Image 1 (cartoon, one colour):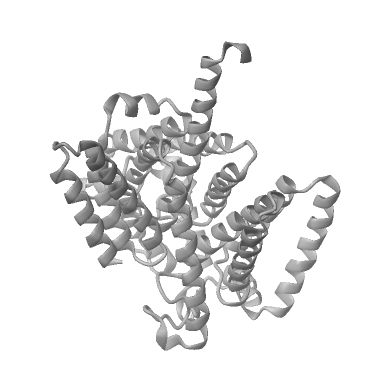
Image 2 (cartoon, helix red, strand yellow):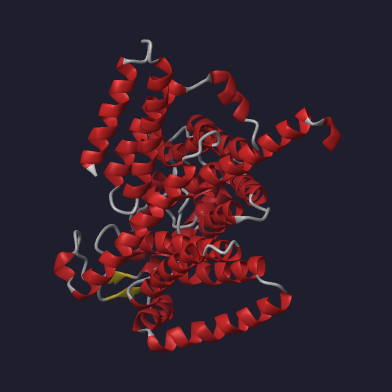
Length: 438
């Protein structure tokens, strides 16, 4: 990975060194390709390494600024997907100034997770005019496929894990929540790719996509899966059936899905343990190992609601969450003494910091992105999967603000929206040049 980054830096430097010479067009092409390759490497690194993905994202941003054409960029900001993301960033920025009793270090820390949404207008502009956007998607799919194979190895040979965790079998890097998010997204994206390829008689692609998607879902069922994935995966499966099957086939598929889910639960100790643990932790919020995951969430949610009620319209300001929990924990013990900057619910995180105003902007962005992907075709489906998955997983986590899930959302929504807007702009330009079509 680091060797690839070094090569890309060399290519970009070569492009810069010849950029004003007689080979300027060639230099511009090389510079653009090098810039795009940083995004491709970042996507490939995302399931494995936060630091590598961050470094490549920074390198992409720096190289992007050298290729920026301000007029074209500001024109691209008219797209609803960009405007809605910028609105969320604007609320977070303004919230710095009404968090009057919050330390500036906390305010800036609260701003950082939202800053990644600035990548949406940048990537829509950049890859909306590029033919290499699909390589980012393929890089992420390939990376998750390799990680899936590695996950099976780590399940039976834990010593081969990069970061071994006794309570997370089959998770060689990061954590099972991140791993599940990536695997589920890839599985449903590949399922649609298989159907589209089959309809176009590209049987080799259809078979390959089906095999990989099945392997990813099998890993979730039998190796490790997050409980959040158990919520959004069935819903995505129903959406997939509704989108790609006729009415009769849909009801047959729905019945098959129910029977398959019951069968998998019956033969998978992994699924049985994950589902039963929810009910156990709900009844016993503090175990021998300390507070349970469910117990923590319920406590965080209860306190966040009370914080929201104290400032319902505009909230307590950007970065106020941790400070509010710290103040509330004084003199308390057990779950009530726990402090967090993340209440594990995206809506509550926004409500605490920016009140009803922040929640309205958040949901406006999600609805806008859902509307962007209302059409047919593989690109629209991939974008829809990312948005639905993020909305549903954000019921139990702050996944828009988290690094892995947040950047996955930014990458997929940006690339899919950019492709859709590119097609729409090309169609509009074609209509304008052919008056007979009007």
